[in-house]
Length: 423
Ligand SMILES: [Mg+2]
Image 1 (tube, protein in one colour):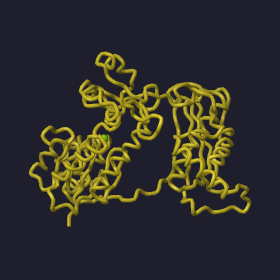
Image 2 (spheres, protein in one colour):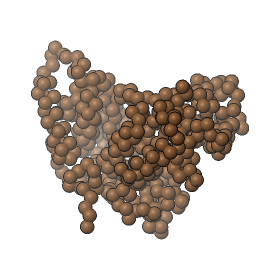
Image 3 (cartoon, protein in one colour):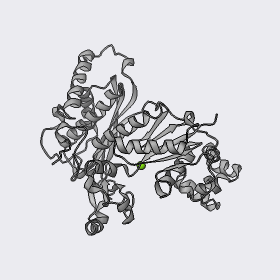
Image 4 (cartoon, protein in one colour):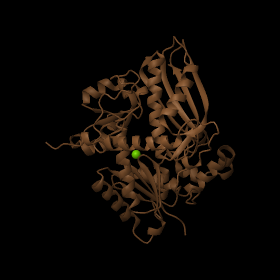
């Protein structure tokens, strides 16, 4: 039985999250900025119509923002992550065959619903998520994931589709492929786009009907799979359980460069804290810790960057132990007299926490440490993150290494103190 896939994608996700809690934003141009309020990473349709491009630095559009009353928000990942979870949970109610593809996208396998009218089913998914979570989504349905992506793109743009496009056995399939630029086909990057256009292959229809040999020669097995997928022959199935993460990286660029070891140590301790929390959430421990520092890579002079890799005596997810080793590693690569713009930590060699290899000379009380971390996590989950934190992170307010979010909305859904108030 040939499968049927749906791709459900949230429209302008971060902006839509902001609108759920601030209905006044409806119909207005709204953008959400990346860390440190750098670039526009989510735009409402009204903002797109003003010509605000994805990824444009905020300072370049300052005048446009002012002239058009564009509402500007800092990113609020606590809110977006939680809203994402609600969307995914709602989707899981429609079918257990779901692959969470990104924070705002999921593939569903709808094969078992084939005897229903799939377009109607798509509309039901769409209206349920709108009603239950408040987020507008688009749904693309087709025989392969690649075609579902294309259907989704068109569903989002076409007024007639009203957010749902079903391309299975559709007379519009050729038309849909024809109006899709090869650049916008799933898996075709800038290099392949250039190659394909040189060969006169400009849209997805031409790519589907391209010479197999030519595509294989240049794009290899990935290219072969791609054209098969466009022909309706599935090469990719649903990936139910995401592969265990290879590593966890936590790093930030500072708005203002910092110079002292003390400040770098605080930043490193804060990033280790975030990373270690992630490790414990996944029930993993890390065997290799890396610390890196970097000066501003856009400057011409006084450049310095370095990376230190430490193999830990015993794999761990204990925050204080990891901070201890991260500081050791940092000290070795810190050089005085540089202006540091970025530091980070990476945890590698992750294994499940129940597979820790013990070490004969281990001096750490692992039992006690596990219990302590559990208590710490529980309190921080209940009372808001960093209710309890390590003193190494520093206690001063307005630390210069902290990421800046000047116009962040509240954590409406994850912090008791920031619930939405109705006046
Ligand atoms: Mg989206």
